[in-house]
Length: 327
Image (cartoon, rainbow, N blue to C red; front, side):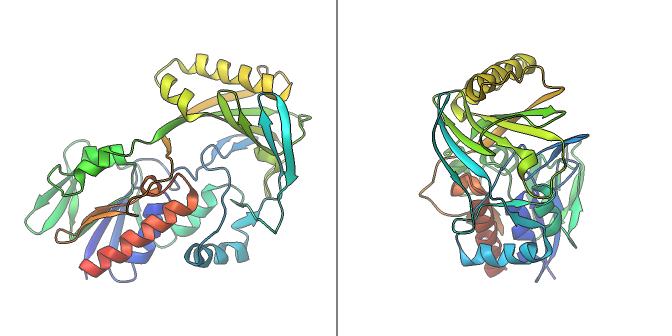
């Protein structure tokens, strides 16, 4: 049986691994302490923040088949949020999400989806792959100390394009394409309050400010009672300030949030900010994945399609099926 490696345990990598393990031995490598990528959860007792992907929809039959078991056991639930669109400081439109156009979240956090999909998989957490080298008819993965992580018959990289460009050989036929679609950055501001704050929405799309999204994370199903507010910056602002002092970034985003909702959030008992250097990308017109079929190596990820949850699933599934064909 072939031995395959998957680099990265976001939704694309986990989807690919689950498809591959039906016909191969699969080992996944993850630099972080846990799986899920941007479907992650940041906890600061008693608060919990879902500081990456906030919510998702299901459009394809294939993604529905993946999500349905999680809906049945409660890992995924519908979020019927009070949704608002805000222009500067004015709510210009509001509506209630419902079963007609369902929006979903992981329960008790978005990371529950990654944990569900990682069941039964061989995952090496806290292991950063920095190089992939061809040796004979196999691929050898190396860590930060140059120590081999094993030899594999095939490799899938599911990390962002810029990171894949650094670790994969420049000789690969698709390597030049890895620098073509730059992902945009985003800051996540996390605010915790001892009691509910009086705002007129659970989730809001914001225009005309340097923040683009506000959500009352504690309003999502299966959450605790502690009030947690999550704010995303715009991609454009984050790209300009990605290397700025984090305290300054946090204070600025607090000021932006206070102006939009009309409540001073600067004195929140809990404040934190997280930088996503590779967070989003506009809709792409190219392939769902890249592969070198004769060498059994390829890349996948939402960055090939669009910065959406289902895009990561679609790319990972297509990549795995294509690799299985080459094997």
